[in-house]
Length: 461
Image 1 (spheres, rainbow, N blue to C red):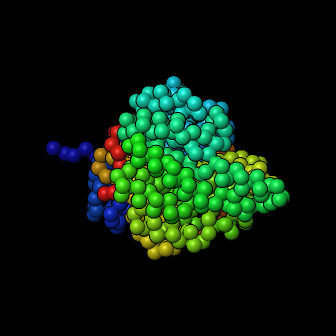
Image 2 (image 1 turned 45 degrees about the vertical axis):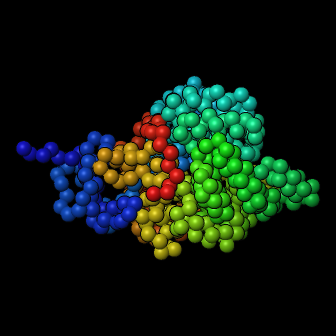
């Protein structure tokens, strides 16, 4: 019996979580990977020869905010940028304008917008209202959220509230029943507010004061609080973004006591420093802020030691006008990062002499596992969705002008940075999204991806 040809075959150097396969191939049938191999290419309707290029699993960004600035209308542009950056699955935060995703009904509305406008696949976080929202947790989990997000710091009482301790205890108990993790924005509000008020009173509103008013202690105090509640309630508690390595040490110490405690690093905390904050001004403002060069080294040591859950971007595409001005406290907090994720992460590994397998592991596979999307997402393996990132090695410069989003969000803290590779192509479920110059996918090419299982993953394998 003659074997039917595959729909398409991609050829190149394959980066798997544990090894690199030079001059290998990925054979695709329908939307999934049907074979992975070496040597002569099998018959296929289409051949995409990326010889000499690096093929990785499409990245899974576990932390982005598409809708903090303009609401759900931001999903289209942000996911278009993701497609151009080889991020084939995004996990979007729930703190949307004008209302957060606090019920299954609101989630269903957002899913409709995702399915109509997204260029890549999207998983979704859920959250709770400031008061009385605990009863909605079970319904959100049943409707397919990949995780929950709460905050120890309040940016907006409706959209991004601080959850008080008694409500947080009750919420953690309910979330523990679902088997899903609960991520926390981890900053101590009382400390940050006092330091900010003191800085403003003395007229210090220059960029470095953003870091000085949100010191590492503000993070670690919040870390201890949330992990203690997690230990008490049995919930899987996750730091949504640790800018200091001590956060991962604290998580590890609580795991040793039987807690389910983890934390992620954002890419900026692996390369940006306080000097970059001073240089970039508002365009370098994010929460938590950049730390010292010595802290960056400690962050890398934590990553290499396996203490970090995964690496994300915390992409928050504020319009350029929100990042301007001499008063750092008046600037919006958040960075663009989806389209720079792959080239910068790739470059950091090359510059440090570290294997590219770490990019496949911490930028795709582990993220998918933490969010219950694996094995459908996050790996080059037979049976998984055919999500592929193609990187072309060389000496390039990241240019914010190529960002595939709304004009007012085409800015980047990485603008002008030399990079060791660029995104030459991306594929979502076997369909090409990006050809190195143009987004080929139309809005609606992406889909909502519900959590596939309730298994708790702590990254200990």
